[in-house]
Amino acid sequence: MSNPSMIHDARQLATRAHRGQTDKAGADYIDHPRRVASGALAHADPAWQAETVAAAWLHDVLEDTPVTRDELARHFPAAVVEAVEALTRHDGEPVDDYYARVRANPIARAVKHADLDDNTDPQRMRLLDLPTQQRLRQKYARARQALAIT
Image (cartoon, rainbow, N blue to C red; front, side, top):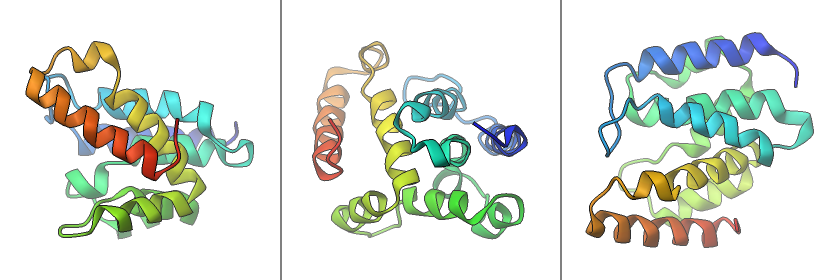
């Protein structure tokens, strides 16, 4: 994997952007992108490993923080920016449109695979109440099916 500075920059931007955020279980949110970045490598095309790890660190910044596409474009190659954009849900967007966009971008698809793996981790799921666990299991099963991820 080449370009460690790009990955470092992505980690730094994500850490700054997600500072103070927590996940559904109350843990520091940045732990999620860290786990996704670690897991994404297993699903990455060898030619795009560095871009995949960088996009994994950044996968929620456009959706959940004030970071803009222009800011990403100033610091990262187009492949990373396009993957992060593909992973960003838009208000009112049909879920099938979102999944089609993720499926069409190999970097985004690899990141989403790692994201789903992390979101369905049994240790993390146990921290949530039962109705939330059931709702999320259904949501993530649908996502895996739509993205042809096993």
